Image: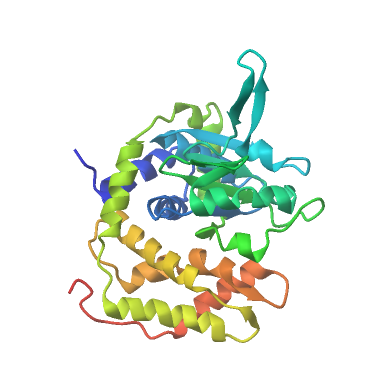
Length: 315
């Protein structure tokens, strides 16, 4: 029996909310990226729950999970794998790296050298790995969740724009309010909720929801609305490089997945507004520093100025 997108979202959000308190919107966006067949960059200060969110999603799915702790001495072969000579067999045997999984947590990705960071590019974009000339396909679904700390620059290697563009979304957890922090104390004071999580979806469920999301209807007026938003990022003052056509397609995929997880068969402008900032902001290049916060404001300003269509979006 196939599961609907809304039922899948409700199950996962309810499950992860036992561990991550007050972040239902972030959980929904993370699940949106998974259904849209994309990857997510979690950027926030230490201790806000980035790693715990990734682990909670992995435990909520009956899927393989692997973690890579990125360090400056990490090599590309440590990620992808390497052929090792087996003396007993008298031949080289492939020792697969941690990228051969369904959900990969790339922890503190900006601590690795650009060469090692680039080792993830083929995995993320092509869903395959090439080792010594042999190309191996990765299993579906495949989701890379990378984390980085934006406030500590010593010993880090900022992700280049080309690699940032490979991430479908960039999310920030944000700090909890007072009541949420009190709930965190109550929930964690005696137990570790993460240890109690069990899978609520299978890999087949995710692929089924993904197929459902692909069929979501996008009205012509909504398509034009999306293009107007993207084109406005290219014409904005102070922008060196706006959102590329890859970003346009990423936004289309995300709004379809987002609508599917809400139980609708069509996309509305509100869906576009809900995912526009996490999908578009990190793809914009400006001349100054503080890229993330300034870019989020830029996208929100564009959303406020762009004419919103009012048609019957189900027609």
